[in-house]
Length: 428
Length: 88
Ligand SMILES: Cc1cc2nc3c(=O)[nH]c(=O)nc-3n(C[C@H](O)[C@H](O)[C@H](O)COP(=O)(O)OP(=O)(O)OC[C@H]3O[C@@H](n4cnc5c(N)ncnc54)[C@H](O)[C@@H]3O)c2cc1C
Ligand code: FES
Image 1 (tube, rainbow over the protein chains, first blue to last red):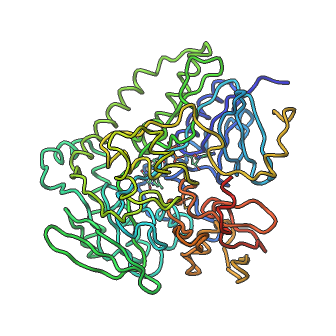
Image 2 (image 1 turned 60 degrees about the horizontal axis):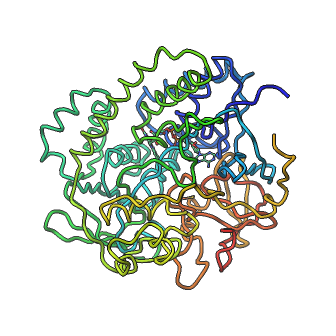
């Protein structure tokens, strides 16, 4: 057999950038992506029949076009497997995958792996966040890119972060502006931080364009505003909110929430750059720094791996300093939008999968270990394996909940039939 | 050209390349059913395969995340049955 490939999990900007860099250096690459197309969270491709392309900064479009051209130029070195879900590493060190098209699980022993599975959004829970009609802002944005059409009916956007005005502007451009954007923080109370951000260029130019689009569509953007509850109401939702000292109620069809992003680490192997089969993380899945940084970080992981495998890596220092700049922008943004945590009402669901509430969490001992939270509280045991309640519990308790280690597999549900067809000699 | 799949027996139109989630939402189907008396029902939430809230049952095949899975002509889909099938 020929040389074992380098495995790359995730076909977003980070994974694609790593794949191109390694293939250009002459190494065979296996690029695995769970969707039917590459692109990741930011470059979700429109379905064939979709209408208009969603408005977004030209810089991102150009970056992605350049990257896909590089992938095409070294297509001979890259095997791309789409609709294939990475399930984790088993006790024997085999990397396992669910090929959804063929309906079978296969195993692989790569020479090294770069895992670039992106971020998940965090949310701050309130009674009713678990209802149909409530979606994450990022999830709604991905769907908007896929279909080119905004959801029908009144939309409310709430939470915190630069994604809120960005999505609001995109919805307005697509023909259905949200009724309001509620931002938890009060950015204009931190003028010094805003000034520092303005000097950072790129992202603030983007923010100004979004702000102009919102003003044009007359979408109110309110600071110090939070959703307090949502209740089912016919085909829509009744949403209670607090804006400063005012309490208000609005009827909407869709409530889109978002309070930032975190690396998606659940079930992902731990980084082991010096192991016999080196494993590196890249992109938002390593550190949530956004799309521009994900491109750099994928390249950085590839160069680190090349150095480890004996090829040069002269460019690394330059990449590090550009990543450091992205880190400073993210930190300033977080500071500008910082807000005090609010304690949720006791009935607020924390774990949606198992129906566990904030009252159930409080019933646990204040210094309960991660294991106790899991086993006694039954938090983080459901289908999402704690991807959403983990960060919520950490925020509410003021410290991170240590992950299960070593990571459990499969990190996603897999059909028992597909698993049964896996035999040792199927290692590819 | 567009096709149809079935949600609890009801035809739902989709555009080529569209995910099951996109087609269901466009048809106004946001509530993906309640597998169990006390647990919240299915719904599309994160859009990227992380929350598992959008997992639907597929006739003669394993359940899938509707937000990741391209719609296909004639698929027969429905809410997950009770007792958390597909999670093990
Ligand atoms: C829902 C969402 C929407 C976002 N929208 C924007 C935006 O519009 N603009 C912006 O600047 N930033 C956006 N972000 C931030 C975004 O994460 C980064 O900007 C950028 O996409 C990060 O690139 P990445 O390659 O690290 O990760 P991603 O782009 O997230 O790529 C990760 C890839 O890995 C795949 N994957 C995940 N798990 C598996 C698995 N187990 N097996 C196989 N494949 C897997 C995913 O399908 C995805 O294609 C968004 C984030 C989220 C979570
Ligand atoms: S909506 Fe979260 S997994 Fe599909």
